Structures are given as structure tokens and as C-alpha cells.
View 1 (cartoon, rainbow, N blue to C red):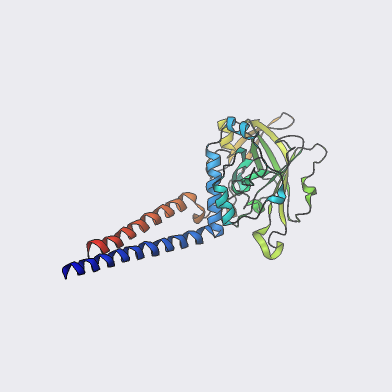
View 2: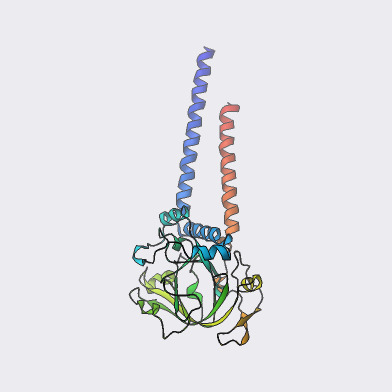
Length: 317
């Protein structure tokens, strides 16, 4: 009789264990799908992708990466989604430099084209045309996703930029400084003339979607386009990279500081770097370190909860 009870008790415990593990797995998968299915989760993954590409970037690696195979076929690109960002996370992307717009808290790795598997837009900002040169006498055209106001991922904050704001781009040999002259929010995708060169003028064009106001500009129907002129060039020294916020993990500017530039005609000048504009300041829920801490804490608590439930089944019954 005791043996039957023991077998019955063992069977109950095994089934209880299976139920706990199955329900826990379903709950965990559900939470994961909700997180990564949201714009917030997508932005988090893109930020992680960008950091991975950014932190290991050196001048030598950037030079090698410029020679890698890539694609400039924009027709093969897709809107950002959970599937696309998670897929891109499994594919390496090779940065050729960095871009920063300190006034609106934009800091991203820069990539040549869309990538051999169209992964680059899920890592940062990309060059749109193969024959344009950073700092050259041409229109250097760059594009990036608009992720949905979840932080400075890619070009989310471009619509907050003003004429006069400085754009810094680097190939880690030199830093090229452009000053924004004009910004438009109602450019249609068919208006590709914004990518044209203008009489050997050294300029830059940044393009992203105007989805920050869908009631006015629709969803994916218009582009935000910021254009600026080259005003300076300097060597990519550690000091200059830090001053231009072109390092892997730039610190937010709390006070105004000065950056010494060399203008295109060779004269030395001093430009004030503006502190981050109020509306572009990151909110607490955009803090990647905080988010990682929350994720790690959730996982620890979740695992401890499962062990506690299993302990109750096997040790206290």
C-alpha cells in the first residue's frame, strides 16, 4: 500500500514539475515576444547591434571594411520589424566610420551601403550611393531608420535638428564637419533629386522617414531630409573624436565646450558644441544600461521563482 502511494506521489510530482516548466516556458516566450514585437524592443536590439559594431571599430578595421561586398539596391530594403532586427543580429555588419549630431543626441556607426544581406540599416546609418566620398566635393548621402521615438536609435531624432546644428562624420582618419542649412519633413520617396550633386559642392544629406507625425505626414509616405555644407576638416585624434562625440560610447554634454576646426579654406576657427536639445534628451526608459539591468534582474527572479516552485514540489510535499 505504501509503495503504491509512493508511486502515486512520485507521478504527481513529475507531472507537477512538467506543468511548472511548461507554463514557465510559455510565460517567458510570451513576455519575450511582446518585448521584441514592440517598437521599444526593436529599438533596444538596434542599439545593441550598433554598440557591438561600434566598440570594436578601429581605423584599420574601418579601412578593411570599406573593401567588403555590399549592396546599394534600396528596393530590397524593408521596414524595421522584430523579424528583421533579430535576423540582422545574427549577421555581422562592418562599420566604416561614425556619425554624430550632438545637439539632437544622435550617435551611430556608419556603414557602406545596405550590406551583403541588407543587414546594415538594423545596425546604424548607411551610405546610399557607391560613388560618393566622405568630405569630398559631392553630396554625401546617408540614410537610417526612424524607430519610433524610443531613443536616439539610428535617426529617430533627426526631425529635432535645426539649421546651424553640426554634423560630424569620420572614417577614423579625419573628421568632417558639416553645418545643417535646411531641413524638410514632407519629401516624397520619389523626390530622389535630393541625392543629386550640386556643382561639385561639398555637402551632406541625411534621410529618414517622417513617421514622428503620422497624422500629418502619414506612415512611410514622406521623408525627413536634412542637408548641410562642409565647413571643416580635422585629424581624427582621440581628443577630436571625443570632442565631436564620435567615440564608441559618447558622454552626454552638460556644458558648452569648444571644438577647434580647420575650415575648408584653411583658416582656424572655433565652433561651440551645443548641449543636447531638451526634447532630444534621453528619457529614463531609453537608458540602455538600465534596460539591461532590468532584463538581467527579471531573468534572475524568474529562474529563482522556478527553483522555488520545484523545491516546493520535491522537498515540501
